[in-house]
Every structure is written in C-alpha cells, then in structure tokens.
Amino acid sequence: MTPGRRPGGRLVRSYVVTDGRAHPSRNTLDLVTLLIAADDLPLTGLNPEKRRLMELCRPGALSVAEVAGHLELPVSVTKVLIADLMDSGHLVTRAPVPAARLTDARILQEVLDGLRARL
Image 1 (spheres, helix red, strand yellow):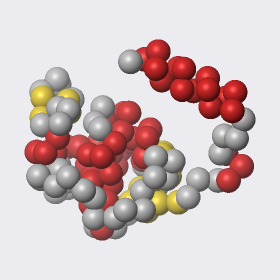
Image 2: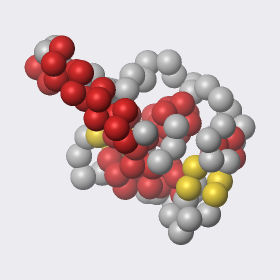
Image 3: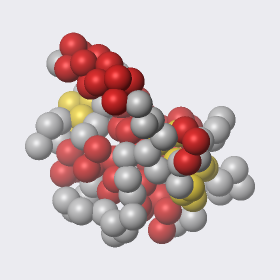
Image 4: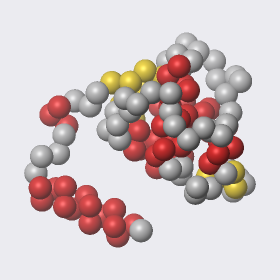
C-alpha cells in the first residue's frame, strides 16, 4: 500500500491509518459522493486523519475524490475513514447534483489528460 503523509511529513502506512482494515463498512461510496460534516459533534477522540477529514468537510460539501486528494491518501483508505465517520454520525453523504455530472466527452477527455499530466 502507498504510505500516507501526516502533517509535518511523518510517514504512516495506510494499514495503520485504517486500523488494519482494507474495506469500508459501507459500499455506497462513489468518487463523486458528497460528504457533509456534522457541526455538532466534537472531534476529540478522532485520529489525525479523521480529524483532518472533518476539518476539510466542515466549511461545505466535498466529494470523496477531493477529500482523498487533500489528505494525500489512496481512495480506498479514504473510503474506510469516511465509512467510520459515517458510522459515528460525524459525516453524512449526498448524491451529487445530476446537473453537475459531466456528459460532454471532450470535457471528460480534458480531465483525463490533466490527471495523466500530473502523474
């Protein structure tokens, strides 16, 4: 697995971040699923990655893909963290707005080209 980086540059293996689990408790998470943080629950007791995820989502909704990118963690690891936070009531999810879906093949190709350029 790809190691994740904590703030400060310390390397942490993905299996440590997920407590050794490879699969989320929920299979309903898609890359474009929107995540919304519950404002009324404290962040105490959360590990640093879960706390950072909550801080990212508190100002507004972010997609699973966006959160994974900000956390610099693989999507599979991010989904495990998200599922844990959903189970504890810290996060709720919403399907993306249908009008926001990309249907133009040209735009999709440009996005794909941009992602490949980053690698």
